[in-house]
Image (cartoon, rainbow, N blue to C red; front, side):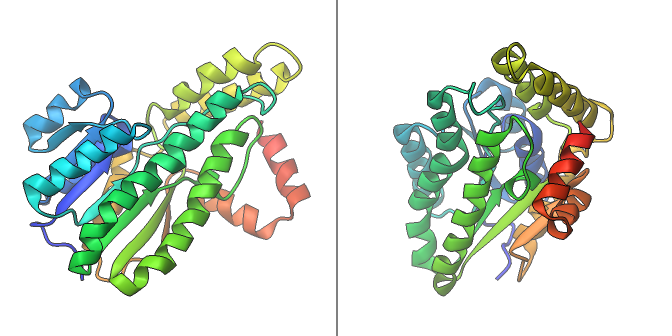
Amino acid sequence: MPASPSQVILVTGASSGIGEAAVRALLARGYRVHAGARRLAKMEPLREAGAVVHALDVTDESSISAVVSSILEKEGRLDVLVNNAGFGAYGAIEDVPIEEARRQFEVNLFGIARLTQLALPSMREKGSGTIINISSMGGRVYTPLGGWYHASKHALEGWSDCLRLELAPFGIRVVIIEPGAIGTEFGELAVVPLLERSGNGPYAGTAHKMAAATRRTFSSGKASPPSLIADLIVKVVRSRRPRTRYVSGYLARPVLLARRLLGDRFFDLMIRRFL
């Protein structure tokens, strides 16, 4: 059954970008929205708009447990979980420290997994619920110097597919959203560490080309607004029978189409020429 405005929704990564836009879009339609992020002060406008805000670090077990417990104690239920928190650890695979690669997976996969584990018992008990995992077109394609980010998103896609099969008998829906280039902090937050790690040395040429291409994509005004994905999240929440995957945002559809139609060698060539 589609969610009704009386239902309770948790959005992670809510201090900016897609998460912030999703919270506002859901509040505008009357939902009871909880917003979680590490930067609590940045969510004060969301609190003023009507959201219940939580300091949430998806890499910290005690933080995750405290947020879920607080919601269940306050609301008695959690109907929709929007797993939006994530980041990109860019740099040559050789240059990114393994500790940082592990953190990439802690945020983009294991934190999502643990939060979902804690949310599921109450959903199973009432026989309904929706898990929305914000992946990326990068979960189905690849670029140079994005190996750890793409690996984490590819893993999220496979994990979500398995989760969907496991939860179907309990009436719980699992939906993957694959945004393209969205006008958020992501671009610059990826470029700075990329150049710090690989801007000098054997991968410098590729690093500077990749940084320039990323800035062109995210700073040219062509990137789609976060509201595009926020509205899509609302559509999923309201849908009686949502699709398993949604693709939306600048470059997403043409890039995924090219990946489907081209073999590895031709797709590799296309990516190199884009740089």
